[in-house]
Length: 171
Image (cartoon, rainbow, N blue to C red; front, side, top):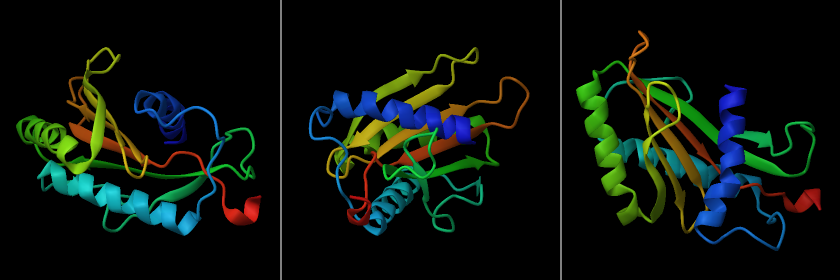
């Protein structure tokens, strides 16, 4: 899971620049509890937007909560942090998952999200991927529909994560 989350975290800069929140100013100072709540709330909202009932991994909302991680993969003690919630939805067929992805793509803009990408990823299976940034909180998502064309069970994988921040006590 760590590799997948790190890829999503690296994508954060690309998404941030796409919505105009990149650039000067450095890492913002934020309360980690507030950021954790924002990411958890957005993760729950995304699950609701899917309009799909299926099985989920343990980290899914409402059971799971975001994890505090270092933005610097070489220094876990770095004061620059991010909140990440990664989970998957499975146990239903591709028709249902496809409808869920369509519902998510349709609902994101009206819920304050800027969709940066909605289309096939670069994998051999050309899985559908939605990348978006919530304009108010700068929370970001990387949602991938893995259709199971390689023999695995079809599922949708979610990475919901904050931009990097540091807590007031870390300054």
